[in-house]
Length: 68
Ligand code: SF4
Image 1 (cartoon, rainbow, N blue to C red):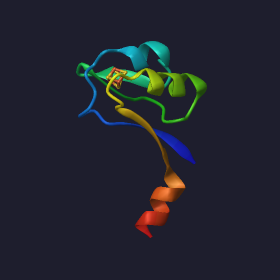
Image 2: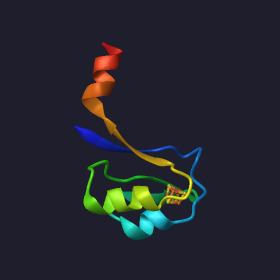
Image 3: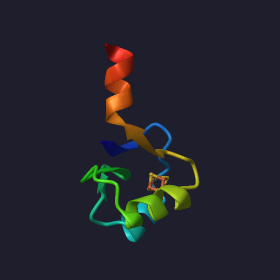
């Protein structure tokens, strides 16, 4: 299962992701955070629009493989 991940340390609070994919991202103290980690077309557009590459898509199964 793929999921959205947002690195708040990289976020500059530009609002692009919240504007493009309001179902996926929301503001939290001036920076964006993931609201719903489901990977949607809008979320992928938001990821591509992020100027600081703060948004990524992670494969949960892979992460579990590494942890195992
Ligand atoms: S597009 Fe990137 S930098 Fe802008 S608010 Fe979203 S995560 Fe932060």
